[in-house]
Image (cartoon, rainbow, N blue to C red; front, side):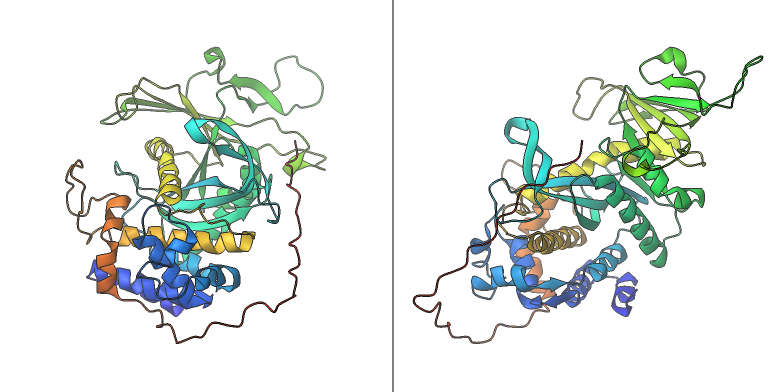
Length: 458
């Protein structure tokens, strides 16, 4: 960890000082075209919702010509490992060590000259799910148990088609090591949705799980069938087996008595009932992550069932949620149910990043440009969180007033132009330039190559 990041970990008596210090360290993480990239991030924080790139160059925070917006994304370079260290160092220390990992799609259906596109899951207009050609970015963010939508993003990665689970395992390993280097002594818990394979995650993280360095919680389908250990019955002959009696989530007769049970009353979810059965394992097949295995491993864990009586807003009682907790340790049921129900906060972060900050608005050509833009969006989200304690509430006439330090990300953003005048900017002032001669007459441009859309394996 760099000396600059260690300095960011030191407590500052002023929230404004922490914000200014973060901006200085962020500027140091920008390796090439640093001034253009940094001021582009400031333009995102001060512009209207979802403004296109050319209009961001008209913001007062961006003091350069409109061409530098594109030049910064095309030719700039960001020290990604340094940014990851900085985001971890600026994490909220009073939040629980619970982190959500989820992927979201950047649609690029008509971008034939953009490489690396694949058919990704996408929720279109009117909430309709479907597949669209584009890029998939996977974000790791720290969760807060307060009844709000704030999260603290720590990492992001561009996911190749069909590699979400393996990339998530690599993110968990790297992030846990980074947390330990930053002085975190608590065991982190990583929460994932049903789109990730619990068996592949358990296998990739088997050493970290056995050593108690990480915890993982993965949602499974409500029709899943897991198995208990095999035991020889009296008088039974033949070789030893692998799978014992089944545990079918849809058949309560196969459950048996739980190993752990918890019942609590919650103001938002009503009566919460959590039950857990330990020593269960899924039946594996020799394909994907286990292709070529002559003997398939037995990956044991705990199956958790969460049932609540209502959802926030007075909605009807939802169906039970089933979660798989791999590893030999016993889960903290109170932590697990709160962690997973707050996993949905990262979806609010994605929605705010897309609609308010314009994350998927730019029509960039290459995945490298999309990655640089995504880092700027995560840095903008972090600055909003750091500014929450000192932002003034510029509420609209129909909005209810909020207590100081309890503003939403959108309300903090309204006050950010004022905060920029207080923190200043580490970016250098632009120099005097003269427009170039342009393209010589008679010179023809070379058409950009076309790339097919990658199709996921079945």
